[in-house]
Amino acid sequence: MKPSDITVRDVRVSYEEIPCRLPLKFGRSVVTRAKVLTAELEVANRRGDVAVGCGSMGLGSPWSFPTQKVSDQQRFRAMTEIGDRYGAALREHEGCAHPIDIWLELEPELYRIAREVGDELDLAEAVPKLCSHVCASPFDAALHDGFGKVNGICSYDGYGPEFMDRDLSAYLGPEFEGRYICHYLGPSYRRNIEAFHLVGALDKLRRSELTADDPEDGYPVSLDQWIERDGVFCLKLKLNGRDIEWDLSRTADVVSVAQEVLGEKGISELYLTVDFNEVCESPEYVVEYLEKLRDEQPRSYEALLYVEQPVHRDLARHEFRMERIATLKHVLVDESLCAPDDVEVARQLGWSGIALKACKGQSAALLCLCRAVDNGMVYAVQDSCNNGYPLIQSAGLTARISPLKGFEYNSRQFRPEGNAAFMQEYGTLFTVANGFVLTESIKPLGLGY
Image 1 (cartoon, rainbow, N blue to C red):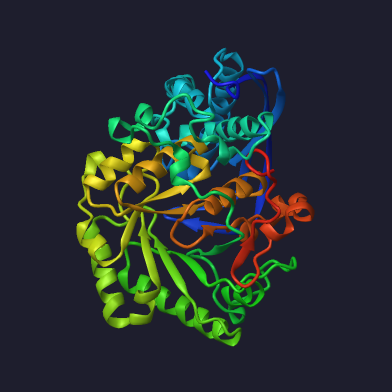
Image 2: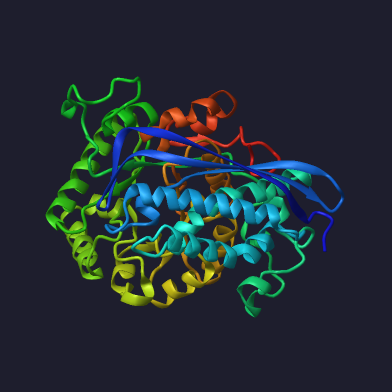
């Protein structure tokens, strides 16, 4: 037992809806609004100190629970029920422990709640594990935030032997004996981190494509406008996955616009990632795309850092072998990843890296990070259009580790009003300049907000 261990004394849950100024298309889904769950947890440590931790997350049902058999309304209802009941389970939890241990102790209860909600609502499909994690992630973030605040530390300074009863062998196996999460983290927040800009399949690339239907709200719309304003040189492309000529043409068009506008700003750097959102029927499609990209667009191929989740998320059922892709470019699991065991499955199937996201849970992200690094795998930090608190959480995580080029920050494109309340206090973190955000406004306690 550690004097820093925490117990939950009270839980408060609230919801809000944030509309998208532009539709966000990924895979087969188009998102026009987000429902956000915010959790506030009053926690006390063994010394009797009390603090309130906060966590927040958009309930991304099309991404975490993709199905044609359950309506959007049913999925949102299920996710809010899971969130409410998980919050109640935390309130009733009587243990006093480190946030990682609380998360793992209640993980079976989370899955039980998800099954219970699915049965009660008579859903045509079971609630996926990933969806359950999204529902619980605001509470897990609030635990870590409250843990740091009640102990007067940055949460990232609380992942070593001074604050944890058990080393990583208790969570990841005997080969991790003597190691702690802190051994995989930097000693402080890096001052600046690159911001990845999302280029959705519906996004316009040049201002000449704009019409009267596009918003005139003071924010850019087309890619060239965004690059002119923010200097972004890290771009994430959403591709089709079923039409290779369209995918190649889209890549060429994006790179052409980016090179042109960045060149005018005197910026020579350009980095790309491509995301197929599980649409490719097999790895062979990706191999063909990469080989043609290498032969026909060498500049685009050189700029490409990795391919993200090209095939179905159920790794165990499909057992796609990814080695041929990995010999060309890094290939990262996203939707397939929830827990450290998933990292090992991905490694055995030839994936070269993982995507970390705050919406999968702070605890799970940290443990997956340790497993991936030990496996010699690369990793990236991405978001799910995070606004406000989870954006700060995601940036803070990025600034304490060494991912592939920065982090994804697309809420400024699609839901900027959700960041408005944070701009005065955290302006340099929410403002992209010359392709970077500055972390100087992240607070020293908790998760930084």
